[in-house]
Structure formats: C-alpha cells, structure tokens
Image (tube, rainbow, N blue to C red; front, side, top):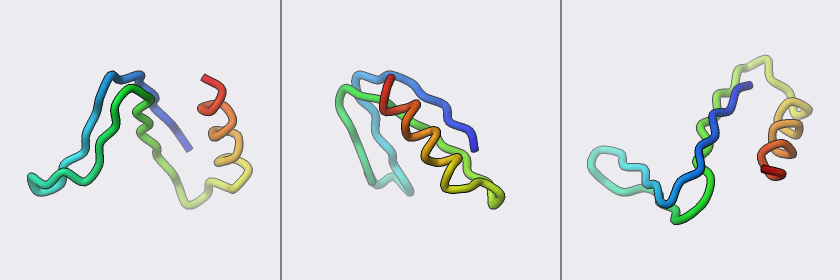
Length: 52
C-alpha cells in the first residue's frame, strides 16, 4: 500500500468531463492498494495521514 499526499487549496476530480468530486483547502491523497495489503496496513496509513 502506497500513498502520495499533497496539500491543496482546492482540487477536483472529473470523469468523462463530469465533475465527480471536489474539495477546498485540504489534503489530496492518491492511494494505491494491492490484493496482499491488510487491514493493519490500512490502519497504519490512516493514522499517519490523520496526524499530518
């Protein structure tokens, strides 16, 4: 499991030219998950990201 984190003033996600999500000030998290990743792996990343 890997995460790339970026602080943003605003961000949005579009799919087929349709807006499907947006945020204002916050963290943009790109997350990669493999079939071998466990709930323990996810909990570890959640704690790290939540405490940034």
